[in-house]
Image (cartoon, rainbow, N blue to C red; front, top):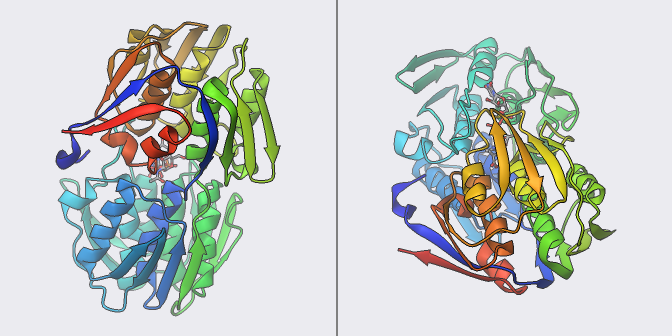
Amino acid sequence: MYKDDIMKKLIIEGGRELSGSVRIGGAKNSAVALIPATILTKGKCVIRNVPDISDVKILLEMMHELGSKITYKDEILTVDNKNVENVAISEEYASKIRASYYFMGALLGKFHHAEMSCPGGCVIGSRPIDFHIDAFKRMGAHIVENGGNYKMDAAELQGRDIFFDFPSVGATINVMFAAVLAKGKTRIINAAREPEIANVASFLNSMGARIMGAGSGTIEIDGVKELGNGEVDVIPDRIEAGTYLIIGALLGRDFKITDIVEEHIYSLISKLKDAGCNLKVEGDVITINKTKNLKAVNIKTTVYPGFPTDLGQPMSTFLTQCEGESSFEETIYENRLRHIPHLNNMGADIKAFDKTALIRGRTPLVGRKVKATDLRAGASMLVAGMIADGTTIVYNIEHLLRGYEKIVDKLNNVGANIRLIDE
Ligand code: EPU
């Protein structure tokens, strides 16, 4: 969270039906990796479908600090890094977003030297970066950590076999960054399989990298001497899409969500169908209607293609509207239930134990003053406010704006009544 934006809040008038269509933007978690990826080449890069979210704005400021020449218009980003210099990433920037860790792999891969402090991001658990650091060391980097500041140097980076105890998204992408210009072959075993990984690999391959198997559990990278021009389309944001599906299941009337990749959110679609939701998939468009008599379902978050941790919190709001007892188990982070007291304050009946919540429904929700404790908690509160009786005020909404493009406009255009107050 950054101080300038601390005072934003949403005022939501609940109970409005939604009809019309919403287009899904580019994926936050791809865009925040694709932008630092450009550091690896002196060539020109074009990245299309870049979402207009605050995490992207911060990354662009960081790139500017490094000397990158960037234009960003109509969701198209052009990047020229001919004059990029390897300056230390200040704590002020690194602490603003989680994705600042990608500067480690990109700077180390390109310049064999990187300096920055610990990455920030949502407070949803301890979120160590030991897999990243251990892999860089294994590839030949010498790393000194001093009070959360990292200094990394490598005479050369050498391709290695890297095995992860857990298929970490950030560590998989960071090792790809360190490996594309390294000497020899790197194999990532137990790599993350999230769709964002293949999106980043296809961007690097368009520059001339040799990455095979991205999207599977084993990725092979043959190091090359240099990279050239690159281009890529950011894939649609599966978490944004899922959030709108959840909203549509509760408030939709012939509500259409466009630019969805069904395969990327099959886990959610399957759970919504189990709950009795009425939805129709036609190509990249899903039409969804409010469903009466929703049934309880159990959710367990896990790695892709399992139910995504980033949809657990908005889904927990949905489960308050299902008849019977649902369980919501979070397995990725220690601390993703901080929104539950706020849902209970609005009338939900949820008992939280460690990383599991038991949700008894159906409970009508009423408008209250609540807080977005992190990005996806913000989405949970937004959904709650939209189905609640009366007015809900969600404080600290700057968290939500980090990851959901033009969310207030997108929802108001289809019938919602939401105001963003910037004090
Ligand atoms: N982990 C370690 N050591 C590491 C790296 C990860 O123990 O070095 C653990 C984490 O503590 C966590 C698990 O592994 O328990 C998964 O972490 P992962 O590295 O996969 O997550 P991440 O790269 O930090 C990205 C997204 C998250 C999303 C996760 C899982 C970005 C910038 N962030 O985080 O997005 O939840 O993958 O899909 O891409 C969000 O958008 O709300 C968000 C939190």
